[in-house]
Image 1: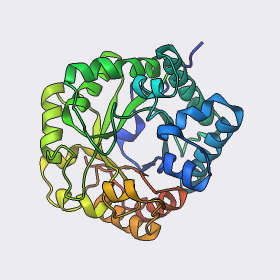
Image 2: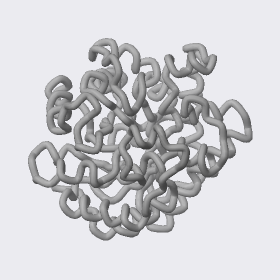
Image 3: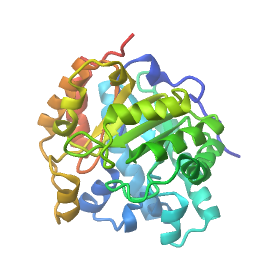
Image 4: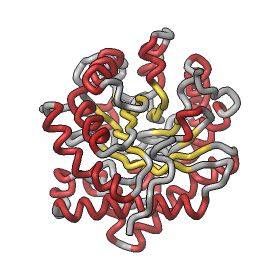
Length: 322
């Protein structure tokens, strides 16, 4: 029997307060923990007890930071690659993929049961990744095709009792629209996080305000909020320089540790961890200018050190906009 969602009807982070989430799960597990993740598929670790234990240890590092700092935490499931196309590459059937998504949410429920406190509420989020590459939009789907594709994974999250859906590294508006519509049909709140390049634009060349405007128009402002991820703050800081209405739709940041471009990161044999303290200061500056940003984590190259620095820098200045 699946566990019922705890916060689906009233997400606590929408009311304010700082909420942390994890960092770059795939880069941490590969480069720091020495684990093999074919196709960057963290969910593949769930097939063995040792892999499951490694995932638990990974999340516990971040939970300890949130509890120590007295802030909320979003448990983002390790399912960025757990959709049917990627599962097929690893020998998973559609039924297998549905099972592994439900199992991932159960893992998040177990962590919440073990560690949640009044000061540190924990939201269980089902993580959706792009059908293609997170750096390259390739041949973009129609919104209808994207909705049909992502409904399979989102339905599994809903059945397993996830509180919300988070779509990470969305490269184009069509796919984001499809995810939002699939989440709405499953009665699931959703956040959409766009990948941006060094110029602050999506990989398609569309500007961030244009993409958010297009998705909001197509879904009647369906997403609970938007996020920016898989880019360094210096890549998108100028885009958020003005206090325009669309910026108030941004509720979270998951930046890269490195200032390198996506192509440079792809071609690099090493992991550029950047400077955690500097990154924390850059997050603080963004939060001061945009107090509606209250979900903070990391993407490529970040780990618990970066999130600890971000929390230290931001927890006294983070305030949700009225």
